[in-house]
Structures are given as structure tokens and as C-alpha cells.
Amino acid sequence: MSNYRTNYYPNRTLCDVLEEMRNAVKTMNFSYLPGLIEEAQSLGNRMEAALGDARDIATMSKQRSELRAEIKGLVEQVKSLQPEKAQEVEDGQYG
Image (cartoon, rainbow, N blue to C red; front, side):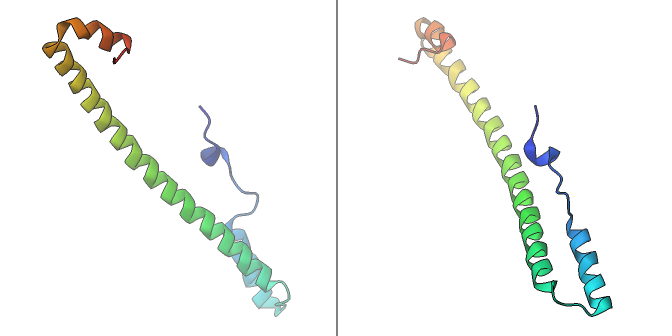
């Protein structure tokens, strides 16, 4: 399964932008510096968002595992309390 975040790599990295900023300072040509600052901010924001997404995915994965374990326990409890309902639970009919 492909994940667009792991397969996506920008054509221009933050390091490239910072290197171009250094060249602007070296040549004392500051005409395009505001655009580079905005580009660096945009790339930095994208990196922060990706870190936040990764943390959220890890948290949700843990919660999903806990909920699956809870569901499994509840299904077993229903099976032991109501044997006639056990087949309905296994078939996905919770009515």
C-alpha cells in the first residue's frame, strides 16, 4: 500500500533554500530574499505538519489496538452469557 507522504519528496528541500539564502548574503543581492524566507517557512510548516501527522497515526494505531482488544473481550462475554446470541455476534448481526 502506497502512502503519499512517504513517497513524496519535494523537488526543492529546505537545505537548498538555505543555501540560496547564503549565496544571496555572499553576493549582497537581497532582491529575492523575501521570497526565499517565505519558501523556507512553507517547507518548515510542511515538515512540522508531517511530524504531527506521524504522531497522530501512532496514537490512533494504539487506540485502535486497545479498542479491538476491548471488542474481542466483549464478544467473548456475550458468547458466555448468551450462547444463543453467539452465532448472531459472529455473523455481525447485533440486534
